[in-house]
Amino acid sequence: MQAWKDYQEKNKDRFLNELLDLLRIPSISAKSEHKADMVTCAEAVKQRLLEAGADKVTIYETAGHPLVYGEKIIDPSKPTVLVYGHYDVQPADPLNLWNSPPFEPLIKDGKIFARGSCDDKGQFYMHVKALETMVQTNSLSTNIKFCIEGEEEVGSPNLATFVKANKELLKADVVLISDTAMISMEHPSIDIGVRGLSYIEVEVTGPNRDLHSGVYGGAVANPITILAKMIASCHDENNHITIPGFYDDVVEATTEERKLMAAAPYNEDEYKTDLGVKELWGEKGFTTNERTGIRPTLELNGIWGGYTGEGAKTVLPSKAFAKISARLVPNQSSEVITEKLIGYFQSIAPAGVTVKASEHHGGEPYMTPIDSKGYKAAAAAIKDTFGKAAIPVRGGGSIPICALFEKELGIKIVFMGFGLDSDNLHSPNEKYDLFNFYKGIETIPYFHKRFAEM
Image (cartoon, rainbow, N blue to C red; front, top):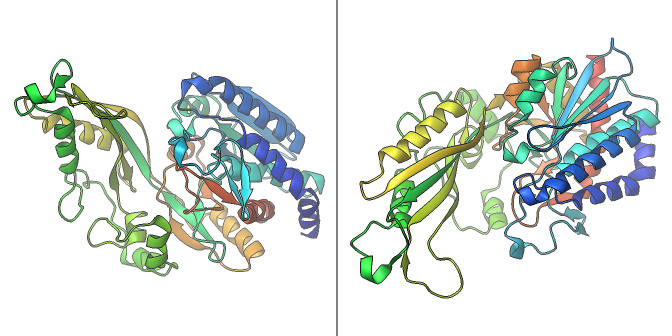
């Protein structure tokens, strides 16, 4: 609609400046020293929702960080869209790898460089500005509810409690999420699924104190060496995960789905160049897109122990640690896989060390049916603004709350993300293209229009 386009063009600079203000708040949910920043960011989200036209916005306290709920109800008889997003961000470490300070947004080459620019402040804020656009042009065709949490990056530990206690408040006809990516702006796509997650930490203890590596080396098991061997044993020569029972519940993709994935644009040379690697690595027998979409994985996220400071210290450490995550595919259970991971590391520990393994958090995989009204509305909206059909793809990331929403609210989820895989999510120099930000604001009103029509 021309009125949407005119309003957005007139206010685009303000839209951007408001987002930049949000990005300046270091809302890092994983670090306790940012607790006050989390409250500040929640208050800012509340204020922006009210300014955009929400009739009611409430900050709900949880056992962790606050959750922001807002709504614009125009007619109870009309369909209701529940928008989910998160205002918390990943830690910015390592800071020395950023080309500009992570919480001082920099616009360069048409991109916003800042922590949270794409994941997920830039993406959920598109919905706030889309609401404003529809309210100001008197063209809102659905009721809209917002659930913007502050704990997604730490596994949404308190969201389940909130959802179960507020089913009537959150009652809707579809959940709309922009926390995913497209293949490219030239090849728009819609994620039809996200993987689940199992995240554990392993602690290996050897001697009761750090030892002199000359005096005790060769006589006492080194926890770092043992941990490295344990981790290396998790994959075989074909990069197949060796943990007993890991693949038991995996639903294999059909030949038809693999053909559909193969039809998506992909240039391996460009992929490698972008990442600065000479060769790719992964499970034998599967393509890169399949490895990151339809196959489960096991990755080492962090490892430490001993002396890592400046200079040398010849020490045999008492302890070594690792953080390990598994991405899961349909039919795999995060609870089951977590139990298998913990059991595996405990079972292969040699007698010279003790192993303690514990869960951090997890989440279930989720698939969106392409014959649902929500998916059809998203596909139609993208066709409206991009002028071409969206390609259905499977996302490699995880959004832990998806299965929870469907179970508790009885509604389907639609992913309509505008990020790119190259946006450095969870990495230094995270970015979000201005074009993508504005394209999202342009497209979202069409989703509401199409969904209301259906």
